[in-house]
Structure formats: structure tokens, C-alpha cells
Image 1 (cartoon, rainbow, N blue to C red):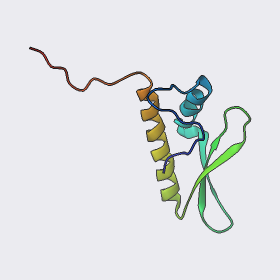
Image 2 (spheres, rainbow, N blue to C red):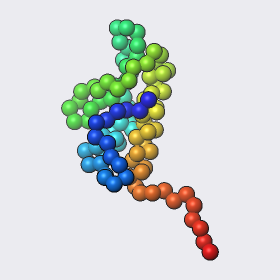
Image 3 (cartoon, rainbow, N blue to C red):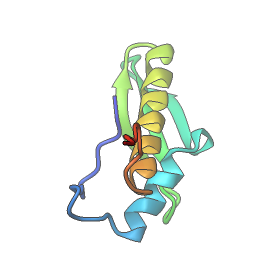
Image 4 (cartoon, rainbow, N blue to C red):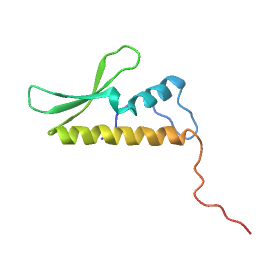
Length: 95
């Protein structure tokens, strides 16, 4: 599961620097943690870079599922950061 955010972007608009900084922050696994809730579920949380509060993201039945959710979020936002560098050339044609 990927991390949800409230301010998205399309190819026509670029995210602001604050959003880019957040994406960079959440692609670092040491900024995440997993806590066990009273109902037995495991909740993933990331440390907000500006106010040092833990922000809950997902809930999973197993600790392995929670860690997989974190890994998926990291992968997703790493790809978003790569996209900001511009299009990736995958093939060039010559005459």
C-alpha cells in the first residue's frame, strides 16, 4: 500500500518543494516505525519532518504485512522522485 497524500500533481504541474522534501523524507526507512494496536493489528507510521509527530498510514494484520506496506510506499515515492528529473529515455531511433 502506498502512502496517501492530499496534494497531488499531474504531468502539467510540479509539486512544491515542501512536497518534494516530504517524499524524500518518507523514502528513508529509518523515518518509519511499526506499532502494535490494542486490537492486535500493526500500524505503520512515519515521522513528520516538520513537527516530529508520528503520522499513521496503514494497518496490517501481520508485522510482515506492515513492513511490506512500508517498502511499497518507499518504492512508490522513490519512483515519483525519479519522475521529477524528467522523462527517462528508454529507446532512441537512428536513421
